[in-house]
Every structure is written in structure tokens, then in C-alpha cells.
Length: 209
Image (tube, rainbow, N blue to C red; front, side, top):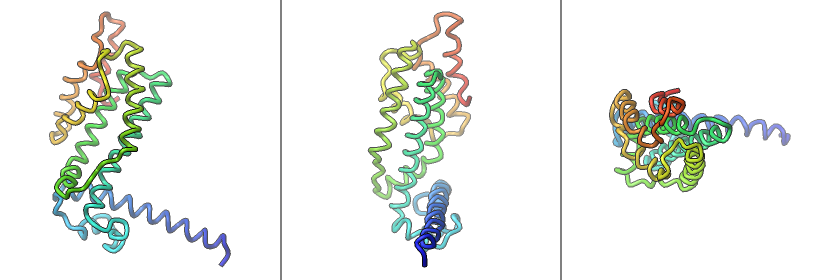
């Protein structure tokens, strides 16, 4: 077999493995949400449309799988924070970006709430220092830009944003999560002193723009 032929076979296999892993993680998130941490690995495999052996090749134990689901969530949050900070660097409103970012983080947290509880019950470590570093660095940039633009209260720090997200009502319906954010978001911002500052206040209401 030629080298090119070997490479040609290897690439589709890696792509298939990546697709299987993604399907397994999505199925695990949904099955844990529906049935709790006691859901069986065979049920997750069936929901993912893969053989049980395939699931175990990727994740030898349920703890490995649940931990991967939560770490994937943290990676998605980090990527979202980086994108928001980059948009602010390119001229977007820090206030609008921060409020929308918090809203998305809460929605993600709601969809991953059961997985995080399952990880705790299974005694699985969900620490992801690299994702946490990326989130913190980008959020620091965003907050700094908001202070310079006089959109954020001057004592706002990264820990405040984490505190809000950690205590958000992720186990409540979407309309209640939206209302919660509408109520708490103005506390992050400098109150508008004249009509020209109204756009920043609007950012607290336009949660899904």
C-alpha cells in the first residue's frame, strides 16, 4: 500500500471517530438531562446511534463521559467569551456584549445543569484550567474596555460576573431566566445620565440580540 493510500484511509477514520465522539457527548448530555446520572451507557450509545463498544473506546467509564460533557461546556464558554472580547476590540458595545454573553452562559448552563450535578454525584473532577484561564483573560479585557467607555461601574470585576452566572436560576424555564437577567443586568452598568446614554441601558433589555 502506498503512503498516500494509508493516509487516505487514516483521515476518514479520524473523521468518523470525531463524529462518533460528538454524537456520544450530545446524547450523554440529553440522556442525563432526561434520566439523571443513573442512565446506562447502553442507553446513551443507542441514543447516539453507535455501538456500545464504540462508546467504551471513547469513554471507558461513565465518569469519563460525564466529565467530558462538562469540560466541553467550559470550552464552549471560553470560546464565546473570547469572541465577545474580540468584537469589543473591533468596536462593539462592551455593555451589550457582556449582557448578551451572560445570557448565553446561563442558557448553556441550563442545558448542562444535569450533567454538572451528575459529575458531582459520580465524584468526577470537572476542572479545566486552560478553559478557565481563557475565559478570565478575555473577560478581563472586556470589562476593562467597558470601564474605559464609562459603561460599567468602576468596581465591576471578573469575579462579579462569575458570581452572577454561578447563582443564575439555570433550573428554571427560559422566560424566568430572561426576566432574572433583565433585573440584575442594570446593576453592572453605569446608569444613563442623559438620553444619549440610553443605548447602554437598552443592552440590558435586548438580551438575545
